[in-house]
Length: 165
Image (cartoon, rainbow, N blue to C red; front, side, top):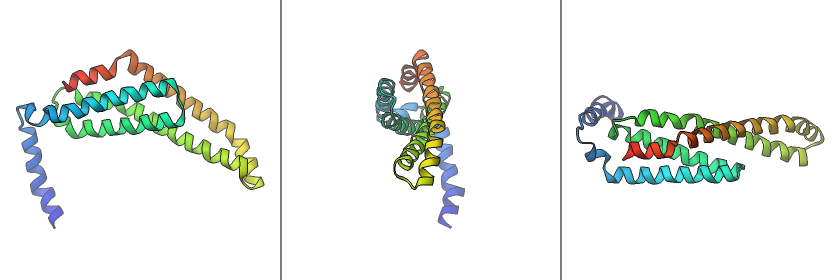
């Protein structure tokens, strides 16, 4: 009953209040902007690390940082009435690509383990499938590299920082 009351009364009132904010400093001030700036710079740093060494660990760390940035931007989007929604959407392809790359890395690890120490039938099947799995991982990695090149060419981190200023 409390959840129903919150959904029917409290939430609509909160949303009306947020929509009525005229002064973006009340909600989107320094306390909101500084952590978001820090998160954007952290994502940019992780992108550079991944570009230098595109391994499973650096890809996973970048994926987690992107996810945190995206969710924080979505939470504070009402504070930034400008193009923050479009900028947030720019994160989606990279985040999804990194998720697919992570899945490929996990599959690769599982099949390598089976190929090395599974039962004879498992070893045979894993060894037969490993080239396909490696090919899929390489394809995902190339897609991520292209997306990161686009980010670099379009200077997306700098543009995002500008929107947050």
